[in-house]
Image (cartoon, rainbow over all chains, first blue to last red; front, side, top):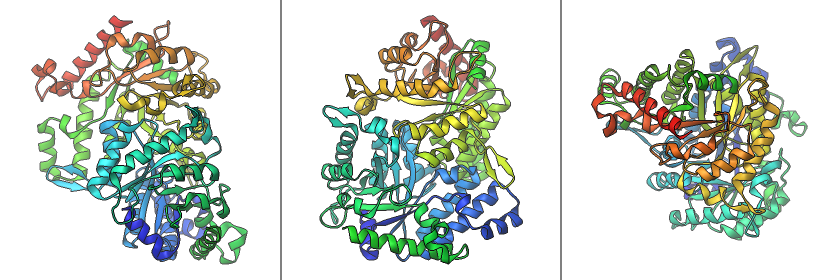
Length: 307
Length: 307
């Protein structure tokens, strides 16, 4: 799957993933009013609203981006209907040729991690049939439980040509509480980075030389990104924290390899809620999807100028 | 919610939580055959099978246990129908008066963690309405992202009388890869334990003196359990790893406080798949629920003899 992601990045010239993390407050009233009128103020209506909103964004940007990253929490909060909207969003993005990175941050032990891996990246067997329950291409994984929490994901990746991004150094202000603690003279996130390299060594794509096992490293910590880039030379880095969280284009250079590859930068609010930003106000609420397209183009230029 | 859990433990004399982690291989053929005949070999059928299996276990044990812990991965692997079976299981257990600990191991940053907290412990607002999407009483939380991943859960707990168990030292063999690394002369899990105490100090139940913020510490690491018991005196410890994973009754004493409270021990496979164990073979497949009841009674005696 990393090969498909890299092809998409080369084709679009955009090492960008759009975070489909819809909050109702990002969504124009016209969409909300219409669905509430049809369905009442229900979980099903909320789910339909976020799906329609996503559809607008995806249709307006799918030719200029390689990938999307739906954050499942934003769907899970609307219960079963919300998760149905997550699955519909995954399917729609596949129809549009996008790589889908499920931001699910799952992780457990043994057979339980295997169940999560099957849920998001694999196929589950029921009698003589097999089903792909959520069918993402790549998903994010939490490493706190160690190798036997991660290895079931590797097995499912190997069997289904899928990938994972393991949380190494997250973008949030308190990520250092545990991740930065010094172990044997080095921060914990470096040890996690070394494990990512080790886990990834068995899943190198021969054509691109990159691994199916990538890492999440926040744009808000550029020096750490530079160091982790050295530790995990064959791992793609998924970089959240650009834009609304404070990361800027000039912070990104160290996340990339010299081949210009090796990183993909996420922006969620900065793109999907662009129409609420003064800079894109001229698009208006009706033009929210076009505003998101313009925000992608501006982000692409910002990153290009930094590399 | 910790008060309700403690009341249940005192009423039943059983500091036991039954892990509702159904795998199709645990389920008698009679249940599977009947549902497959009705519905075909579909995700919906698999979900119905695990729900019916759970119902048998819950009805056979609800008067002798205080709580259940459904592991959401085992439902998520069957996609949307599976998650619907999770929710039906939560609702059934509430009807039976049980405390429901959702083993979801969620954790993210800021607004995303808030969305998970709302999904599992809170209410989501849609227009003028509010809905409890999954409606567990307590859920498990992964701490790797630090305080700003956990605090949104604390807010939702405070507003809705709910609780969390934070992963501190997990029961699996490789949990030590990161959790045991030495930071400032002490293992990382002790630092996480100190944070659990800090997070929990704001959510102490005045009647019992215990906090709504508990910790997960594996039965497979009894010495570490003893140390963590000292570090977090007001936190309940949820103890997985008893039985199938190797933890024994005699390992459990150090997880409890001198008041005989402070810990609740989980068993999943050892109870729900008891009928497949030679010891309970006399119950047969049709008696799977009664076998699980007997396994609970035996576990209760084993724990009592150790305390």
